[in-house]
Image (cartoon, rainbow, N blue to C red):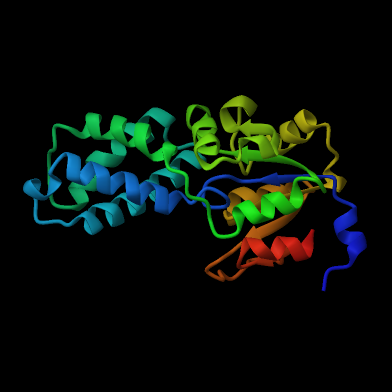
Length: 237
């Protein structure tokens, strides 16, 4: 049971986007299946569209971890993921990788799917708090994603890592977000699915946080709140 006074102290709610509101896996899967059919990828090896999607999601997650840690650039992430996917599938060389990369970037952000209860939660929160986004996603993609999903109008500030000049979990991106929103850390709360980027990043910046944790991962330290479904925010806030 959440004390009403706890929720009342907040004025600003900051959300992560990918995997927290925008259903990255589902949107990526739809885009990848379209690409698989468009390029007749079944003729280039003995792998199914399901294999293609699975290896992409695994490879992409690994590369994003490297990017968030500052070990690779945006360009390296985008250029290397499809060659690495095909290598994992046993295809040593596939000349159309640059075209696939461009198609993926053009198709995936236009997919509209949100995680369960995202829209209902945003509708519930919009008149109670000022809502913002803090995302490590690339600036050229985030606006397309929110427009495609019909959620752009909910957010006052969209803080991208490119705009802030640093990535979550760096404390400076949270400080930049607070400054941009005209918010104080004590009156703000961060909601995200990444333990390191969202939870620990916000915690180290002195901001309360909600760990969106649908898989029930074990927490290294106790977050302010730990939820399995976004609908639980309507009880917390």
